[in-house]
Image (cartoon, rainbow, N blue to C red; front, top):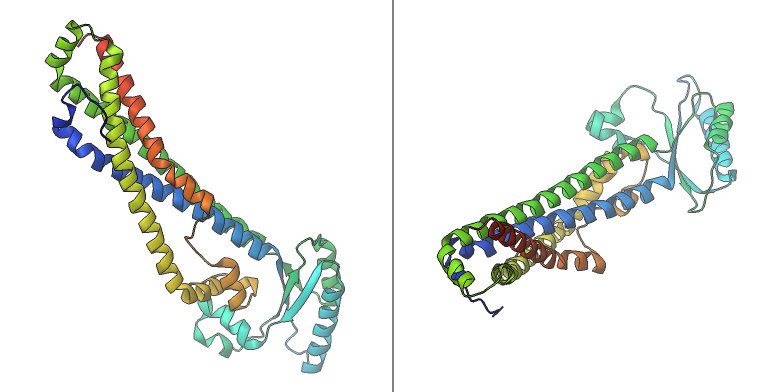
Amino acid sequence: MRLRSDLPLNRDAAARFLPWILGFMVYLAALAVGAAMVVDRLADRWQTGLTGNLTVEVPFDPDLGVAEKSLLLDRIIDLLSATPGVAGTTLLDDREIARLLEPWLGVSASELDIPLPALIAVTLRPDARLDRGQLQRDLTALQPGARVDDHGAWIDDALAFLDGLKLLAALLTGLVLVATALTIVFVTRTGLSIHRHVIEIVHLMGAPDAYIAQQFQTQSLRLGLIGGVFGTLLAAATLYGADYLLRVTGPFLAETAGNVAGDSAMAPDQAGGGLGVHVKLLAWQWGVIAMLPFAATLIAMISARWTVLRSLARRL
C-alpha cells in the first residue's frame, strides 16, 4: 500500500472518500454476483427436485362405491408400477390432499362437500425415458378424466422468474462497474484540476504524460484495493448472515415450499429437500467473489490512466 507518488494526490478531499465509494460499489457487486450464483443453484435444485416426479390425478364419479374406487386405484397403481422408468408410487390420503389444498381453500378444505380426486405421487428413475403420451392414453382407458401432471408449467414459470432475477443481478453488476469507472473519471479530473500548476511544472522539467498518468494510476491502485477488499469482506459477512437466517428458518421455508408446490403432491420432507433455499456458496463461487476487488481495481486504474492521458492530450 506504500506505493510511491510524486504528486500530493492524497491531500485531495475527493480521494479521501474514494475508498468508501469503491468499497460500497464492490459490496453491491459482490452481493449481486453472490445472489446470481445462489439463484442459479436454486434453479438447478428446483428443476432436479421436480423433473423426477409426476402426479396422477384420478377423478371419481360421486355415485361410485368405496370398493369400486379401491379396485380402480389398485389397477391404476399396478399400471404405473409396471410402466418402464417408474421407481415408485404413493397414494396420498385425504389428510395430505387437504394439506395441499389448504393454501387456496383454507383450513376447512377437508370439510368441503365435494368429491376430491385421488392423487398418486409417482417417482421416476434418474435415467427414465417415460412416454407420457402413452401413459396418459393408458390411464384414460382405465378411468376417463385421469390426468398426468409433470409440473412442466410450474417449472417453466419458476425458472422464468429465476432467470429474471439472474438478469437483474447481471444488470446491477454492470451498472456498479460503470459507476465505478465514472467515479474514478470524476475524481481523476478533480485531481488534475487541483494540481494543474504542479503538473505544468513537472511537465516543464521533462516528465512525459505517461509519468503523470502513472501517478494517478498508482493512487487508484492503492485506494481501489483498500475499498475493494473492505467491500468484499462486508459482502461475505452479509451472505454468511443471510445463510444463517435461512438455516434458522429452514423448517418454516420447507413447509411453505411444500404448500406452494402443492400440485406436485410431494411430501413435506421431499419439498424441503428438493426446494430448500440456501445461500451457501461453493469454493469456486467464493473465488469468483474474491476476484471482484481486483477487477474493480483494474477498472479504476484503466479509467484513471485513460482520463489523464486524454485530458493531458488536450493540453490542460
